Length: 170
Image 1 (cartoon, rainbow, N blue to C red):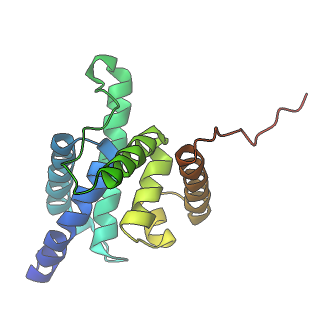
Image 2: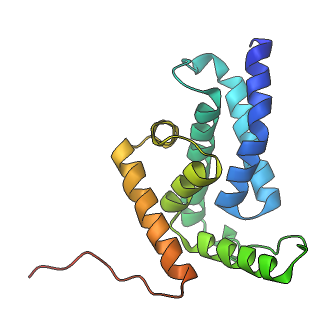
């Protein structure tokens, strides 16, 4: 691995940590996910085909590891952890802290596939194409998941209930 490649990987660590924290909601589990992602990226670096940013490639690795863990938890329900996110460190203003807590709780209630797209586009500022490559879905799927996530987030924060747009036809 070249030193430039190592520098790119190291530069991506804060982004990986933010994304992991958004996915799992727990600092320790997020750090474990980042560590596993970095280990896999370093051991499989020769497989990276330099078709995009190394950051997007690492997000793809993290996505796959996260999905594997979600599937594992479904098969081992006793390993499930409380879905409520831990409190954030004290913020200077009470209103800001409450808004942040509400946002975290609503994010945690989003389906994982919507939450990951929302975090990658909104927090990590990745392009739709990079997100599609990272999580292995078509760009249209990224766009529709993002749209549904934004609408659900907006509705939850406004206190509205989401009505299904799918109608049954007899």
